[in-house]
Picture 1: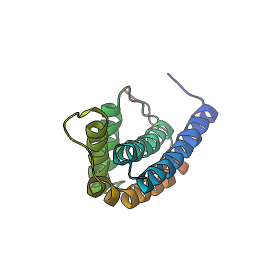
Picture 2 (picture 1 turned 120 degrees about the vertical axis):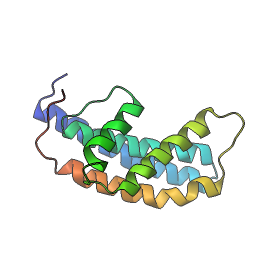
Picture 3 (picture 1 turned 135 degrees about the vertical axis):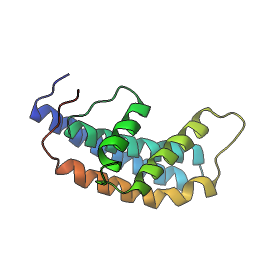
Length: 140
């Protein structure tokens, strides 16, 4: 699917706003002690921001794992984004899966609370990159 520059910008803006909103939802749920929901919202905040970054740079993925893979390939491996943020994104993905689907383990405060500030920092960094992109590359 080929997007015009205007369409791409609209999607990027929308997803970055969703990322910021998801972080606010995470913080609100953390205050209430809803750790699975907090982990879910932190992951989706990161996912929305990374998907915006990929889109503004001409990359598309069909799955969550595909977004993680493309992010690693185009932004972590190339040193554009620090490795620690790639690890954070993977950790958020794993926590979200645990919180949403694991019937034998509940997330606790100590699993999730330490990830709120690093996720906010991650969203800030990714947003800056997405708001000043390079020319989009064509996917092969």
